[in-house]
Image (tube, rainbow, N blue to C red):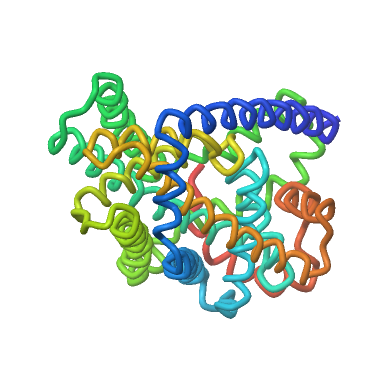
Length: 371
C-alpha cells in the first residue's frame, strides 16, 4: 500500500514538473525577447574559452562539498575522496534532471556509497553536511539580500521579494536552531505518527530503527567531533567564495569591464534564492534567466547580461550533469535502475556483516538518546 501511494505521488509530481518546465520554457522565451536575443547571444559568445574556467569553478565547488561530507563521517567510516566525489556528482546529476531536486539527489548519493558505508553513517553524515551548508546559505541569503536593498535602487516588486527573503530566512534559521537545541526528532517523530495511525505501518516500522540511528548520529555530531565544526564551515564558505568568483569572472567577460565583487556577491545570493525556491523546475529553466535578468537590470548591467550569465551557468550545470550520468553508467546502472536506486533510504537495509561491523560504534553514539 505504501509503495502504491508513493508511486501515485511520484506520478503527480512528474506531471507538476512537466507543467513547471513548460511554464519555464515560456518564461525563458519571453525573457530572451525582452532582453534581445542578439545581445544575449553576443554576451554568451564573449565568454569563449572562459567556459573552461567556469567548469573548473563548478568542479571546485562540488569537491569542497564532498570534502565537507567526508569530514562529517566518523573516522572508521571514512571513504576515499574520489569515491565520494563520484557519488556527489552522480547524485547532483539525478537531482538536476528530475522534478524532485534534493529528494532525489541526496538518497542517490547514499545509494552510490552504500556498499562501502553503513546506511545510518552515510545518511547522518550527508544530513549533517547539508545542515552546515544550509546554515551558510542562510547567511548568504540574508547578507546578500541586505546588500542588494541597501546598495541599489530597486523596482518595487523586487524590493518586496527582498524584504520577504529577509523575513523568512531568519525564521527558518531560528526554527532549525530550535530543533537542534531541543533535539526534536522531526523525521522519526513524523514516521512514528504515521505508524500509530496505520499509514504504511509495516513498511515504515521496518525502517524506523535505522532512521533513529541516523538521528542519534546527527544530534551527536558536534559533541563527538567539536574539532570538525570550523573546518566544515570553512569548506562550505569556500563553496560560496568560488560561486561569487565564478560570477565575477563571467560578468567581466560578458560586459568587458571589471564588475564589483559586491555585485557578484548580490547576484550569487539571488542565484541561491532561485535555486532553493524553484527546485521543482528542471534545470531552473526560465526562472534563472528571468530572475537574474531582473537583478542585473537593477544593478545597471542590463537584462541581456543576466540572461547570458544564466546561460553560462546552465552550460556548466549541463557539463557536470553529463559527467555525473557517465559515472552512473560506469557503475553499470541504467536510467531506470538509477531511479530505483534513489529509493535506497526506504528500501535498502545494510547487509548483516556490514551492520555488525558498526554496531558497537552506533551504540556508543546513542548513549544520550532523548525520550
